[in-house]
Length: 159
Image 1: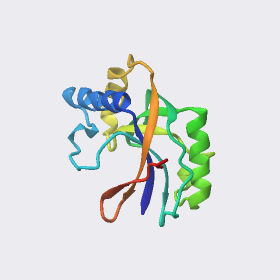
Image 2 (image 1 turned 60 degrees about the horizontal axis):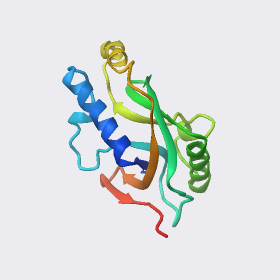
Image 3 (image 1 turned 60 degrees about the vertical axis):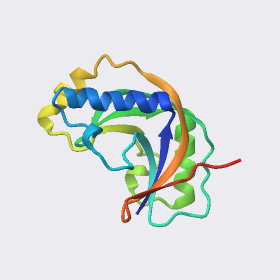
Image 4 (image 1 turned 120 degrees about the vertical axis):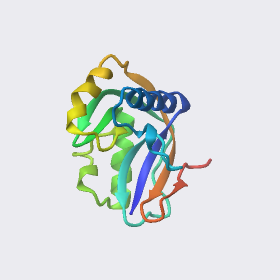
């Protein structure tokens, strides 16, 4: 399985990592302790069994991050912009995406802060981050993550 992911500019990446550490320092679950080399803030656009030779990735894409919310067992920052939604719909159509949660009409764009946060930590985490400002920046690169090999490959279009 392959993901198609957007990576954030350095200011947004740093801000998300700071939130990971803030949660961890408060004794809450976060991605700060996930040490795999591919762990970095990203927005997943879709998943597919096989990538086509090219994808409609027009970068950079403006992104607004925040506020935080619970998505199932995950804590995340919402991510949005009209350009982001348009790009995701184009990617979805080009790959025949597999996960119905990534269908454009169901997709909830986000950047994960913690993947399996215990329910007992949800309220404390949301309170900790309640005053976090909305963050503005861009997605400046793209990659695919292969869940079998656990390797990430750059998909950023080159001029």
